[in-house]
Amino acid sequence: MAADRQIERVKGRATVATVRRGTGSEHTGVVLETSTGEQLILVRLGSNPFDDPATRELAGRTLEVEGYRLGKELRYVSARDVG
Image (cartoon, rainbow, N blue to C red):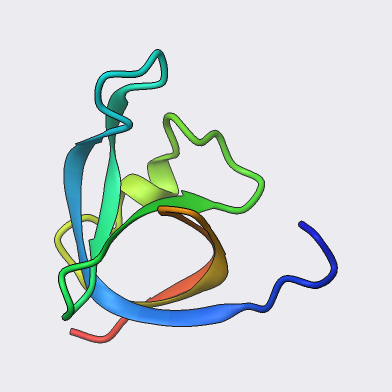
């Protein structure tokens, strides 16, 4: 991560969806949908971006996630269930 990036805190509902549709990187991943309708692909910092069991376990939960935004991706360092 670049030293100038700021950590963000984002709340939303985690769901499973097809991400990066139409590319060579298309796969099923976990997406955080915010109250404004924004969808961010969740990738745990340092994990496999295509298949991470810890990230899959977040699906179906309402979360507060802390991480670094990179376009439509949120590389998170922590996620907590806020029910």
